[in-house]
Structure formats: C-alpha cells, structure tokens
Image 1: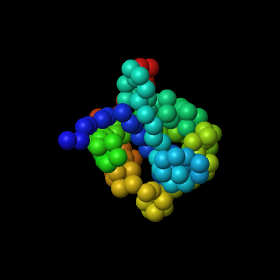
Image 2 (image 1 turned 120 degrees about the vertical axis):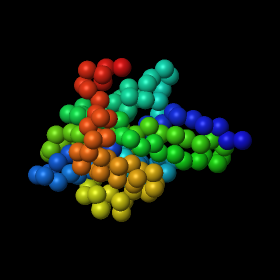
Image 3 (image 1 turned 180 degrees about the horizontal axis):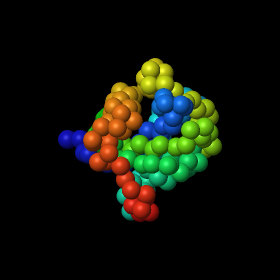
Image 4 (image 1 turned 90 degrees about the horizontal axis):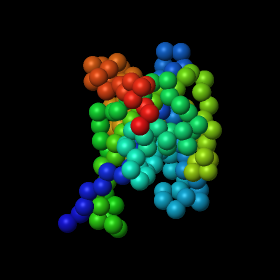
Amino acid sequence: MPSLECTIIEVCVFRYSGDEPEYLLLRRSISDRIYPDTWQIVSGSIEGGETALAASLRELKEETGFTPERYWVVPHMNTFMNARRDVVHISAVFAAQVPSGSTPVLSQEHYEYEWCSPRRAVELLVWPGQVQALSVVREYIVGKKIAGRLSEIPREQWKC
C-alpha cells in the first residue's frame, strides 16, 4: 500500500506589470537528476523540523532571492505519485507577490526564468498540478475573491 508524504512545498510567484499579473517560471538545470530542463514554479523540500510556511519562504529566497510583499497559503494542494518509492506526495502551495519590475537571482538549480502571462505559463508548465495551482492563485488571490483574502498570511507570522 502506498504511503503518504507531505514533505514538498511549492510557491507561485507573481508581480504586476501595470494592471496585469505576470507569473514567474523557472527552468530546471540541464544537469538536474530529477526532471532536467523543465519549467516549474518554485518548489522544494521541507527540512528537519521546519513548518511548510518556513520551508516555502526559505525556498523562495534560495531559488529567487525574493522576499515577498504579500504572502498566501493557496486553497489548493498538489498531489502526485512517485511509483518508484510507492509514495503519494501532497504538496502545500503558497503564493508570493513581489514588487513590479522584480528580477530573480537564480540558484544553481535553475538556469533560466520567464515572467509569463497566464496563457504562456500554461504552455510552459509540465505538471498538471502546477497548472491547477496557478489557476487557483489567478482566480482566488489575484482575482481578490473572499478565499484569497482569508488565506493571506500576515507578515508577523512569516517568522516561523
């Protein structure tokens, strides 16, 4: 029987260009052992006794250099199966708004980035769960629906 693990986080990063949102996608290193040369949102592992929130903020900083202006827990969980390990992964998803004009400083994990329209992001993203996460961010957080307002994490809670 497969086991369940919640050891991975994902962060959908966006900024505004005028009134329009742009979403940050990162291209994995060609030499990466897992899914080389694929486009993705910020993702990483929860380490040691970290909370999902602390891991998401750390990974955001490590992979992009960004400290967000605003931060949300996204009302969506990404799930995927690792058949080799017989594990179903459940990923907590967060959203980060960064200032318009922001430019990421990439870690060695990625070699390229692109600020994308929603349509372009869907074209580049490989995994359906990340496409769905971006859609939820776009509809509920960027779209300023009640669920988005309720899921914003106040800055004073970012220190975990």
